[in-house]
Image 1 (cartoon, rainbow, N blue to C red):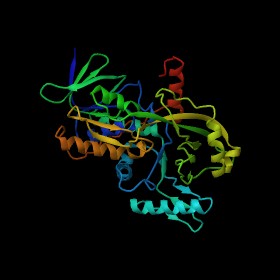
Image 2 (tube, rainbow, N blue to C red):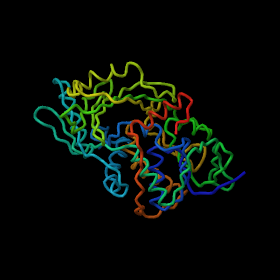
Image 3 (spheres, rainbow, N blue to C red):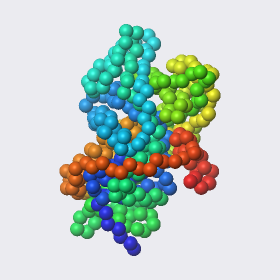
Image 4 (cartoon, helix red, strand yellow):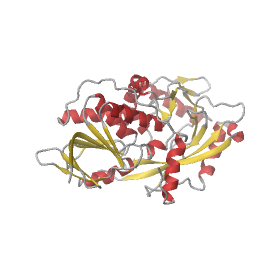
Length: 388
């Protein structure tokens, strides 16, 4: 039975796992990234909105907020190095009625607490100039590509089947192929399946369930171009449906928010359009004349009564869990990665060097739009066809 040795194993090739691998490579720490699929970003990271949030409306003082805000600063430093396209379109909220106007005023106050620039206008609307959109699949591939250029190893089709302590310290990561990796540390970034990876270590971490978010995609109507993200005023029922441009000039409306149990059901349900269209058209009437070109669903890894569970394992020294990272995972990924590297260093399992620039990764090439890629993969997999 073969045994490979490395410093850190990162389990999961979504945006958080790739960001952790990238952060380790930038600090000259040897790492291997293990992804169960045959390609990166085929889970929640490849089927979200692509919006990079500033944290303007996040609850002050929470870990999620701290990491979203930190990520916004880190992105400014790294985007040029990664070569990822970002459209800094900004966002706006337009209240309807006095109750919503008061709510928007509260959001503006929250933004001030978080140090995020906003503009509250006399009509009660709020503009957030820092909100942006990107191609989330390209973002994931850029992080992974730069990590590889910096010395990290990437393994696709690598399913973890066991975790245990190693004689003399460290961990043994067993793959389903029978291969074993002996590592000083491991980071569980398995998204929807982070709870199942934790159970491999004999740990009942948190129950992860899928929160399904469905989106509709439109070609802009003739003569119309959506120039910014349109946000609804949040209510007790959630943040609601938003309308936003993509990096390639299309328009997306959504998401829904359905509490589900099946981690493999990526279908767009029959009533998705009914739940999305009326709300979206109220915000952006030009959608009446737009042509729908597609739809997709993402499954966000939500935790039962838990959010942003980032903590050391209670059963295996050297294992760190990163679980229940919900819809802000794309926005917070760089901050999460920095936080995890700090945790590993504090444990003494790694000795990171100073941050260093990494070679620019080769740009990802694909004939598919980013939002089509994961949806097509899931559709083909559901039919029993080879998805890649």
